[in-house]
Amino acid sequence: MIVKPVVDIGKEALHKPQTLEYPDEREAVTDNYRGIHKLDMKTCISCSACQRICPNQTINMVEVNTEKGKKLMPEINLERCLFCALCEEVCPTECLILTKDYDFERFDRREFIKRPEDLK
Image (cartoon, rainbow, N blue to C red; front, top):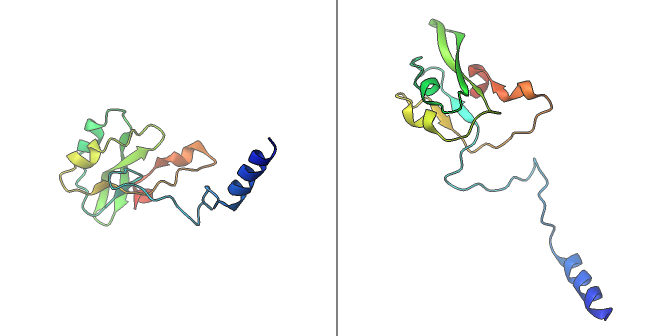
């Protein structure tokens, strides 16, 4: 009666741990994973297509100073984002893409609002 639990405990003690040492080790993501957005500010044409198609009203166009003057660029609230990739599909210059990055831990909720400069 006592032998089986002791054997089970011995087997489990010999197994490799199931947890990862995050952030040093990261879990592999699938090919179709959609993570944090990336914006190429040089190719953005300020068309606002991403803002109009967003079903959750996650994207706001904000004014940003560039080399060519002021331009409207997308600001993304990751708290509200569904990661549906509609913004990526509708972008005519393909300047807004979803990466495989899943680094979502923050101490302050305001850090989830990503300005265009933060989306590099």
